[in-house]
Each structure stands twice: as C-alpha cells, then as structure tokens.
Image (tube, rainbow, N blue to C red; front, side):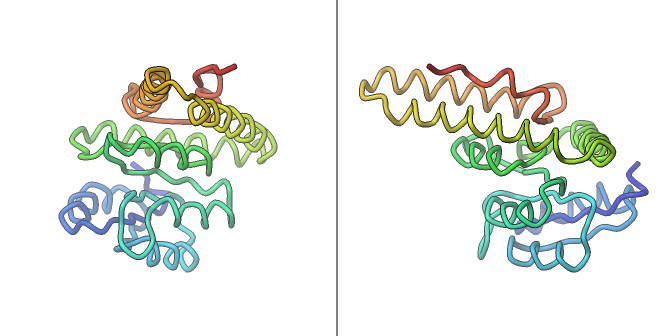
Length: 197
C-alpha cells in the first residue's frame, strides 16, 4: 500500500510496537522503530524516513519535543501524532509546530490508520510539487489564530466564561481527532478555528 515510502514508528509501549509493526511492515518500503523521542530523533537523522508516526507521552523525550526538533530541521517532514483523547493542551502545541495528522489511541479501525497515512503522503507529495511557500503561509495563519484563541482563554476572569471557552476549544480539537479519517491539514482547518474577538 505504501511500497514506495519508509515509515518510522516512535513508541515506547511494546504491545503497540508489535501491533503497528504487524500492520505496517509489509505495507511499506522499509519500517524503522524507536523506543522514545530521543532514539526517534537519532533514527530520523540517520534514515530520513518518509513518514514518522509518534506517540505523545514517552520517556527521555516526548513526541512533541522530538517533532519540534524535526520540524525545525525540515518543516515538510510528515508526522502523525498518536494521542489519547484527553491530551487537549498538548494537541494545541502539536498544531502550532505543524504536525500533519492525529490518530486517537487505541487504534481499532485499521482503515482509518491506512486512510490517514495515504492522505498524509498525498498532501506531502502535493506540497513538494508546489513548494513550501503556500504551506508556510497557512501555517502562520493557523498559529496566529490559535495563539489569539489561547490568549483570549487565559485572559478571561469569569470562571463560567472560561469553561465555555475551554469547551469550545475542546470541541474544536475533538473535531480534528474524530472526523471521517481522523486527518488534519492546514488547508481544510484554517477557516474552522473558533473565532475570538
């Protein structure tokens, strides 16, 4: 299915490693595995995989820290974040640094996993053809909108209003995680960010 692409999985849970390896190893050109973000960064530098799939919470270096370093090196590097539903604040940071897609754990629907990977590769190939200018501009717009929303939430004194804003943000993140293929990209998302004054 992904025979022309290499995939790096960064995951500290052994059962999840085995499960994902079983699903993906025969579907891609080459499959790499790392136990934490520190090792994941090292494998990335050595192997330059076409796609990185990373867990969020890991020892030594978490998925966000690793992804940030990788995106600083190559903003177009496709990264999919595996995350639990409750990791709302971490997802805000993931969006800010430009992660390409989110998959909620546990991954029970294999079709969602494969569809997400396929879409990430499709968008990556499209961006390679068009260059980085458009993607960078959309990323900047998204970053500014999210920062504005977070500033607005932090500045609210009334607790009930703050809860309302948090719920709005949580709903927004939830929509990202639970759309038809659990896929996130800047082009489709930038107009859906909750509006703040």
